[in-house]
Structures are given as structure tokens and as C-alpha cells.
Image (cartoon, rainbow, N blue to C red; front, side, top):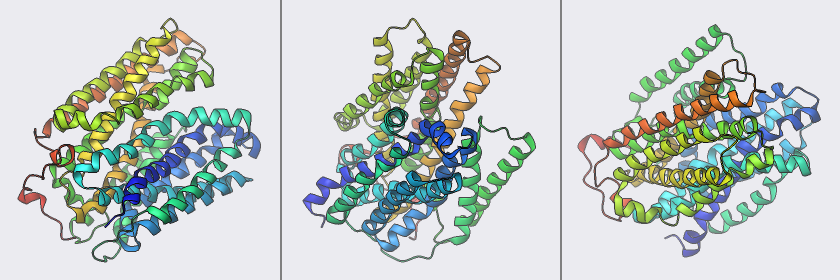
Length: 479
């Protein structure tokens, strides 16, 4: 029986750890020029510092569920925070690029275990009727971390030094560790299963190569032959994993969970939706700084309304979903997100400040509702014994969607900018406007994925009603 104190502190604890992780994933980008100058290398050579963290996440997220089932959520989550905090210290103390890359790889190991294990603990602690309110605390860091990262990173580098960017994690990590040992529940799997090592090699290699390609897209010049060969290799490894997983009782990622309709729609629909939304953290600073000529600190402040609105939405999202249902909310809200993205195509040097702030508020409001709905719906019809696997799969797809979203933003920007010189502010703004419209159409079209839902899907979460009888095809697990 979970204690009242654990139920009270757990959402805040997981949210704090995830905020630390999400913030760190984006805060480094702002500091790259300062780090390069300090280490006496070119900024381009530090691309590995950013990419190494993404690669580490892609490799270690899939194995996090198996580790949590075997060693317990409290021990694994505490270890993840300790690794992440210790690696942050090493990053801040780095004296050369190889040391920085190694520290970032280690940091990714800790980060890879924090997100799925924290979410798994939430799922196992709260009943499905309570899950939506609890998950709201976990959604916020994923929304505001990428928005606050560049702003906070710029302020720290301007007033202190780039090393303090990493040292900020230390007091947060120490406090989080204290509360983990005091209040975090300790759940283990009902049975011990062997690690699917072959599946890990196939999936981790495929996703690592694909994530790297997407991360460097638009920033490194790969010749077409090399890029194509690496893409083919990545797809081949992932297809090899699919074939391998079908013949195993305990695969690394049990793809049969996608036969559960609500899980399939939430994860795959969310993946497509994030392609459009994921490009905004890349496009908006370009619009504000290059297109409108604003300084970095003012550009950062214009990202804040979205964060404020995202936190405000959590107060009413449960009531909205209970009243309208998941199907209606996700279909309509996805279109509204697309429409809001399209509004950025109206922003230019003559746009009033209140209009830009209003778009940001709407964007944060609708995004928060969308992520709350998608992330909670994924577990509506998943049995408790499959919660670890569901959390691992969901986290893996979200990590890939982050890379794909960044690539989508880079692609549309490069396509519409063409050879336009970035000193031509009017042409840059016009090209970015077309990029926003492209992402808006992609996002709005992703609402078609949610038409597959039924009217009463997710009521076990939104209204506390028992899940409907599971279709025979969905009961495929022997785990």
C-alpha cells in the first residue's frame, strides 16, 4: 500500500527530475559558442557534444523497463538521478572535447532511465481514474523545458560562465535523491525475464544511427551516398528487430502492445503530431532573432507565454476530457494546434506585441491539453502487468519524435530559405512564414489519426469508468 506522503510527493518528484533532464537537453545549445571558445575548438566540432546525449538516450531508453522490473523503481530512479548529477559535474569540469562527449554520454544514460521509470512509477501508484491529474505534473516539464532552456542558458552564459549551466543540476539532483529515498515507491516486475540482448543490439543500433542522422541534418554536409547508406542501414536494423521480436516470448519491446487500439492511436498519433510541434523550438528563435531582429533575451521572453499557459491548462484539462472525451478533444485540439502554428505566418516587424503573446498563450494552452490527453490515453486499456513495457515503448517513440520534429523544422526551413541571405530580414521572414504553414498543415492532418478512437475510449482515465472488455486480439502478452 502506497503511503499518502508518497502519493503526494511522487508527481512533484518525477516532474522535477524530468524538468532537469528536459532543460539540460536544450540549454547546452545556447552555450556552444562559449564552450568552443573556452576549449579552443570550433563551434561546429562541438556538434558531438549535443548529438552524444541524444544517441545515449536512444540506446538506453529501451532497456530501462527491464532494469526497473529487475531491480526496482526506487533504486533505478535514484541511480539515474545520481548518474545524471555526477555526469553534470563532469561536464562542468571538462577541459577538452573528448571529456565533454564522454560526460554527455554518461548523462544520457541517467536521462534515459529517468523518463520511463518515473512515468512507470506514476502509472503503478495511481488508479486509472487518478492517472490524468497525476500525469499533468509529468507533462509540464516536457513542454516548458525546451522553451526555457535557450533563455536560461543565454542568461547563465552572459552573467556567469558556461560551466554553471551544468552545475545548476547538482543541488536539484541532491534534493531529488533525498525525496526519492524518503517517498518513492519501490515496484518490481512480477517475474524475472532475460534481457533480449540481440533485440537490444538491433534496436539500439538502428535508432542511434537514425537519431544521429536527424540530429546532424541541416548542420553537417553529408554526401548523398553516405547519408543514403546510413539511412538504409538504420532502417534495415529496425526491420531486423521487428522480425526478431515476433519470434520471442520476451522481446526488448513487445510490439504486440500496438494491438491495443487506444495505445496504438495515442503513441503513433502522438508521434505524427509532434513532428509539427517539435519544429517550433527551432523555428521561433529564427523568426524572432533573424526575421524580426530581436536580441536573444527578448526572443527568449517571447517563449514564456507558452510555458505559463501550459501550466495553467493542467488545472482544467481533466474536466475538459471528462466532459468531451478523448476522441473529440484530440481530433479538435490537434486542428487548433495546427491553426495556432499557422498564425505565426502573420508575424512580422509590424505585428503588435500583444498578438505575438496571444499566439504563444494559445500554443501553450492547446499543447498542454494535447500532451495530457495523448500521454494518459496510452495507458487507458493497458493491463498493469504490461505497464512497464508500455512506458518503455511510449518513451522510445517520444524520443524519436523529438529528433524527427527537429529534423522537420530544419527541413522546412532549409527548403524555403534556399539561398536567401540571412541578412535580408524580409526574405527570411517570408521563408519562415511558409515553413510555419507547412508545419501547420502537417499537424492538422495528424488529427486524422485520432478518428480511429471510439466515443467512450479512455473513460477509465477521464471518468473513472471500468475499461470495456478487451478485444481478443489485444490479449497477446504472456509477460
